[in-house]
Image (cartoon, rainbow, N blue to C red; front, side, top):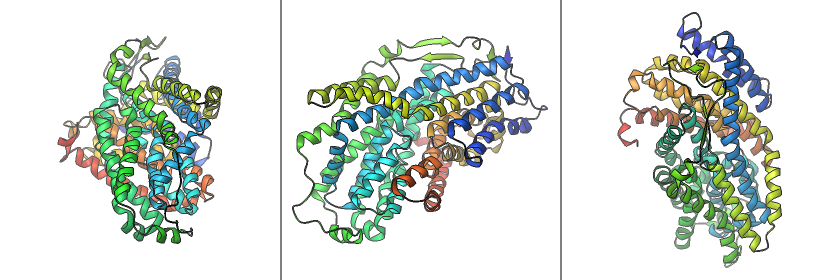
Length: 552
């Protein structure tokens, strides 16, 4: 029997916390200093964590290895499964050709105004892509589309990096939040679900603030103050409709669908608003972009049936999730298989003398990945009725698995690392040490998520690394006893949202897509990221004190 303690290194909490940081330092050094691939960096960090767990924290080697194995199993299913299903669902629309129709739909809605079109593509369509694909896909796809509109590469890259913030917390069917909930649930599926839903609801009181203003920032980046004077009202309507829906969906619907619903609602309201209020000085803006003025009555045409077919996948996924989340959640949850992890269950206790979560929950039907699989199959069948290629959808599934192999391996390794740190006591040592910062911890909490995602490129990975740490630090902090620890899981998630734009992965994708240099993009985007982080830190601090009454 092994029980974790908070000060195993020379009886010193500070020294124990410092040693516990070594695996995280190894990960970041490999990724940033050595510039190793993410999956290689994660593997090295996992090995370092095993060494630290065994020799510094006194964990038996077999239990340390089994801890990593349980984490890897959770990383593979459901986390990797959810992500692959989300990416495949989007690819079904690509192989059918309907994604091109969706692009044309944005062009029609924009009414020829390149600034509004760019906001709709980068923000609304990017939100849809983030909801279903994530992992850099929204940046690559929307940057290409905005370049095709006629936007200069540097502006296009910066615009999509800024736009790809507000949706990230709920990206890939809410995977970052699902991960955060699981990391603090101790292996209890019902607690994990309850925690994830509460974190999602709290994020719903943070993310909408950024969603409200991001479209305005995109317009400012694209066309400066002149563009802002012409389009501020339209950008505000797009942002406000997205923000309000994001809040409602995260608090009252299925958080996994937050970005899908918010993007579609924002697009729908934009269509109505643009019908009555046209953007000003459209041709003047086109001239500044070096484009020909648009002739009266001329524009992109799209038959209504093609427009509806382009929207069919997203309508289907909303219906499937609504049925599963609101209609039969208990029935689906009853099919979960709880497996006491062999060799680990009953042999490991946390510092409080409780089981740290050695039960593996195999949720075959109740996880979002299965729901996306069902929605994808229905979409493929619907498209096949109209002579779309059903066989290509099946082939695309295999290609998606192959394309995501290294990203999947990274997630598996990172979850293995997180479980070793949790079960050995490393996480609680760091958390207990941070708890001594008192109420200032609330101000610093988002920085952990920001750093984690900036380095790993993934909000999911950042939550896997730091969720338990944030939770333990908050629980041990007497100054924050009146606040739910879930606030700091939300802060970690939102910090990751803002750190995404400066991650090497995001910068590399934007650079390759637009032909810009990563270093140049980094210099342009870092002030925006730091500024947003400062706003978030103040917001979280306020929510832990004077604004705590607004939290769910």
